[in-house]
Image (cartoon, rainbow, N blue to C red):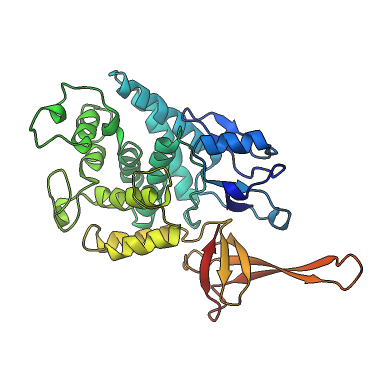
Length: 353
């Protein structure tokens, strides 16, 4: 599998990762052979990157923290909740709780696996993929911090629904009152969740505080330091990171994962809690599987595996080609897997699309 720009995809290439609708339905299934029409339609849908199968990497299987079935189920239940909020109706909490329970269970089972965020975003599903990614990242961080199952579920629910206040149509809610200091989507999200007696009030504070910065310059209340709940500090980082790497977010620029991590490091003790930044960097793959890298050897390779304790030092597969001196100039090749965790003199010098 390789993760490539949609502009590099050619008719006949085979999709390596399914694409979902905002309802959690499969738009294009893994294994489908792409046509010119499909590629053009994906461009119109806002797709910029795709996972494509490659014969040199067919046996490379991406380890998943959360299974595809659980991810699709979470998107479907989130979609149902959002539809209810948008129409001013009450949503059923049980579907959200079921999805979150599965995410927590699988994350605990796969705690040694680094999280790769590989879902393909479209204009239609971007909000749902963003919410799911933030939820998975926050849950992985919570596991690393030693939270118990109850705490992980409270964190995961707040993370999955952290932006639900952006979608409310309840103009009578306090957050819509003219000149009110609560005129912000964080307050609206808090008001929606705090009325759900099946949910912990702690989960409701995640939407409320995920734009508060530790130096006191955030919104909506300008909280600082220990005034901000630990869960909200986690989601603040995850939310910002996922927006940075998404071409469909409201951020001014889109960054590759390793640059987004560098941006977050630069904001430690300003926007973000330093302890939480450290745990975040231990949880996320700086170079996701399928990423094409340029090495200090001058070679180009593709990430095929991760080193849990060294997220900046993945395993890279390089295809070394040699042309044979015959009439057709046939090309021979050698496959070489380089574990950067065991090769301290080889460095990553760039990321290629």
